[in-house]
Length: 435
Image 1 (cartoon, rainbow, N blue to C red):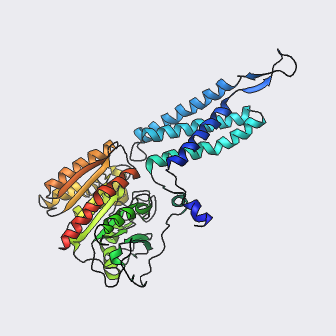
Image 2 (image 1 turned 180 degrees about the horizontal axis):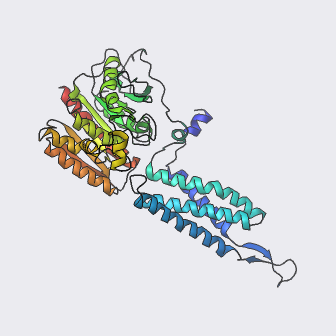
Image 3 (image 1 turned 120 degrees about the vertical axis):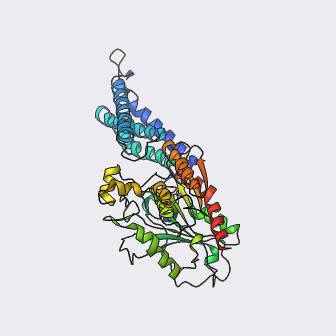
């Protein structure tokens, strides 16, 4: 392994690395806070005593910065609901620590002598980096340094590569451009997982799973942060190299653009996912044409899309795993959502909700379909969504399980748990549809 590869493989969530960093950060902050040692006029020449002047001021400023930051978090997250989810207590704690550390660093630079200024300058970036690492543990978004600096670490798929001489031990994760031939949708490159059974000569047709990241996000997120290939390789190993071909598709076209997975002025996202992508897959990869063996999986906005697609077009998909789904496609609020993607019609926006789609199609809308709905046990709003969507799906005839990732919230820890727990079951259901 080269030095660059070693650096990119650095783990960002390992306690063995993070605990010493946290301890060093705390010690550095305490040293910057400590009093200056000054000469004492009350003692003989050369006598020195600690001067506590300024300690209280520095501590008060740091505490005030933390409190103000917590209030801002409450306003942004709970009052204005800017993120669509409530910030967790751990994230709020690290944000307050960052603010306190920055305030302490600034006062150390202003008030301190030479050595204090040097330490305060070191504390300045540390007050950003260390809390960011803490928040990353909470969200599990970036497992390694490489996933921070590389938006997509996977090589391009070679459609003309020679088949493997023997069944490989693991599958391959590759990047591929899937054009929007009919939709014109400007999708970013997809990320595809090919199981060992797809890499040999004359492979048998395999089930398909279309995957969707959250928003903001990118197709590679399902593999880097979600660690999906690890789950798929384990499933393939238990089934003689057979697992679904999984394609993480770009339903957004840009990290922060919420297309709400419909055809609109924001782009024909629905046509891209339901027509362009399947057509390309059947033309280029060993996938089954039996749409009962096609499934969906998504997280957050991507989970909402998965629920929209399976309820709007149940003849095209046989199963779905929705991780932390919204009740309906949403961008900020109902009217803004309607203005962005539904021609200003709130009625049309409401009709696109998965439950509305199920009601419109009747009690047998999802007969023969399998659904798994999950959320973090600490993510109360999205846990309620899972229960409500699950109840509606059962009434529509689906076999539906609802489960909650223990102790996690609206984050990639929940995704990883859901994929480990439920994706193999979805794969079994899709293979069962082929028999």
